[in-house]
Structure formats: C-alpha cells, structure tokens
Amino acid sequence: MTGITVIKCGGHAAVDPAAICADVAELYREGRRVVLAHGGSAEIEHLAGRLGVPLRRLVSPDGVSARYTDAATLEVVTMALTAGVKPRLSTALAGHGVPSVGLTGLDGVLRARRKPVHRAIVDGRQILVRDDHSGRVTSVDGELLTGLLDAGRVPVVSPPALAEDGAPVNADADRAAAAVAAALEAATLLLLTGAPGVLADAADERSVLPVYRVPATGAPADVSGGMRLKLVAAREALRAGVPRVLVADGRRPRPVLAALSGEATRIVLSEEKD
Image (tube, rainbow, N blue to C red; front, side):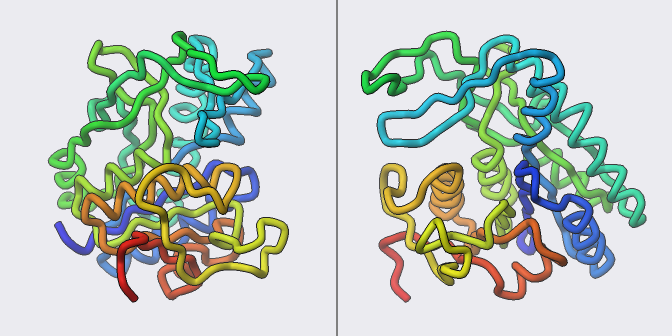
C-alpha cells in the first residue's frame, strides 16, 4: 500500500478547498493514490450560529485546546461535516472528473474509544468534564479504503467516529487523518492549515520553519492554538511508521503541489538525526 498520500483539508475559513481539490485531481490524473481527509471548524461555527447552539472549548492541563462536544454540539458537528463540507468536496472533485466516495466513522471506517472524563482548566482550576461526547480514533478500516483506492476512487473521510458503545463521538480530524495514514502505510501525510507551516514566531508568517522537531511527549510548548494538536497528530503518524509528514499552507494557490514540492514544514521526531 505504499505510495498513498493522505491530505487533510483544514477547516480554517481561509483554507481553499477548491484549490485543494484541483490539486488532488492533478495527482489523480497522474495515477497517484490519494485519500482526502477533512474537518470543518468554520462550517461547524457557522451552522452552530444559525441554530443558536453555543460552542465552547476545553483546554487540557498541558495547554491543548479541543472542542467541547455536548449532545447538541455533536449534532451540529455531524450535520456540518456530512451535509456541508463533505458534499462540497465531493462535488468539487466530480467537477474535475474525479470519482470520490464520502465516508465518516459512522460508516464503520473510523472506530474510537470514548473519553469517559476530560480534564480541563477553568478559571485556573482543574475540573473533570463527564458529558463530553468525544473520543480518540483507535482503528481504521484500511481494507475498505484500500478497496476504494483499488477501484479508482478517492475516499473523502471525516469524523464523527463510532465508539465502542455503538454511538457517535466527535474526534479530532488531524488525529483521525494521522490514523488513516498509519493504517494505509501511507508515504505522506499532508496537513493543510491556515498558516504557511510551523512558525518560529506566531506573529510573523515569514518565520516558517523548514523542519520542526516534535517533542517525544506532551504538547509542544513553543507553538500555540490549533498547531499544538496538529503536531501531536504528526507525532502519532510518524511513530506509526508514516515516513513523511508535512504541515503547509492551505490558503495559497496550488496548495498541495506546492507542499509536496517542498514549500512546507517537515515534521520529524525529536530523537531523529539529520
């Protein structure tokens, strides 16, 4: 199954899905095997606003921020990803002549372990949150995805995932993409985001690092915001054997082709040598 590229289309509002799909189509015409993973934070926020569902974030003791997913938010997440983002991506691919198949974990492709409790920091105190419908992807149906790739299709994959109790749970889309890349023994995992890569200075987009060494444990302390969780996902993919993990700009023209040509931050494990 070598040679597969897993591309994560970030949910940041500035990320350009049309440009990403155009590049996926070019790779497809070249005979490359591609899986398109996605989240949809901007779509989730937009839909939640329309429906009057308040959104909250939980910050863990090590500083990682994640979406708080109560029952109402889980419904919003499911609708936004399955009825909003995914159809648009599939339609864009079809416009380029690329056949795709849209899947979520609820189709059985992503299995997760529900988090029974979530530790969070609120007003400087650590609390336990027990009504958070989220989980971590523990297995991927690689056989299903491989079958689709063999049939000449581009799988378009996203959360929610299916928990061990048979109910849906939200899962971080970057970590889900990492799990997909690991299950498929992908050659490359590309995480496209609303930044030009990992920055040495978060206030200066010119400070893109060509290589970032992700620490062996914990959340990276030298980055902030959503980039922390992306780097945790990158570490998980690397540890699972994915040889190349890139973080790159999803806002620019030709975002995929530029990243694969070197305009990206390559993530390596801290213990790796140059």
